[in-house]
Amino acid sequence: MALLDTLKFIAAHPFNRGHTFSAFGRFARWQLRSRLLRGEMVCEWVDGAKIILRRGETGINGNYYCGLHEFADMAYLLHVLGPDDLFVDVGANAGSYTVLACAARGARGICVEPVPSTFERLLGNLRLNGLPSRVEALNIGLADREGELRFSTSENAMNHVLADAESGAGAVRVPVRTLDAVLAGRAPALIKIDVEGFETRVLQGAAVCLRQPGLHSVIMELNGSGARYGFDEARILALMREHGFATYTYEPYARCLRSLEGKNHASGNTIFIRDAQRVAEKIRHAPAARILGRSL
Image (cartoon, rainbow, N blue to C red; front, side, top):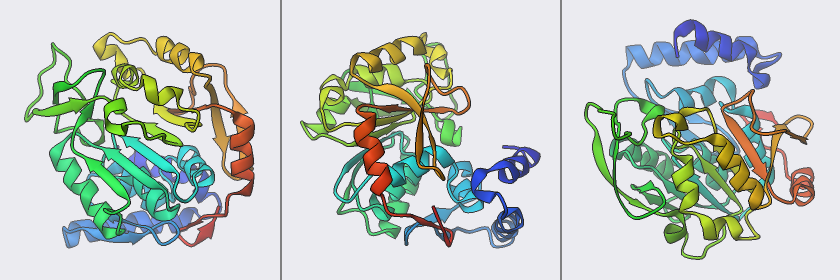
């Protein structure tokens, strides 16, 4: 994200309303520190959970500037997950969502990150928060069958499965399993899927999981990138409807679900919910979260 785009993002972020100067101050401190000392920095984040800031990690660093980089979706996770719920993070990257779920909310976790260098950063955030005993971290990919796939390694949070006609400098071959095989009958309450367009094949390998009545929410990135594989997002929406899920967006301050027609066009992520009444009740009774010293 270019500098001007980053500043615009910080200024417009809902958590920074009335606190813009503080947010810009955090941005400036990290920019100076990362250039002068050229190291990592540990940030106190949500309810005692911590994250490691590194240069070039847009999502993790955005949490420091803005409290919750993906505000509505991360706030939804904080308000809907409880202790000992099972959270599954598919395409975990450096672990923002896993840290929120398992360190800030006390859930159990399974996180999947295929790119080895990113997986090492994920492990660093898990160790920082004392999570290895609560979180099963897997350095694999997910698809509709077991095997091996090539992944890009030079695109940070946008690393992805390389399509047949696609080449990638430094591409790595990664073992692949299905989500159903990974879960082995365990039922998550919430799944986050961020796989840069490969959602269709991940869902095809999760048929048993999607039928589990305990699964009430899926936060899924749908940004059109599945076109590189010839996938149609309309088929994903139809599949989720078949399993009883409807699409929503979330208003964190009001703690309110808003029904959508189709995917969320205002965000890269769409929240799929089954049994919205039960979910709304969980949200209503969820404790407030302390984020960078403020309550939500």
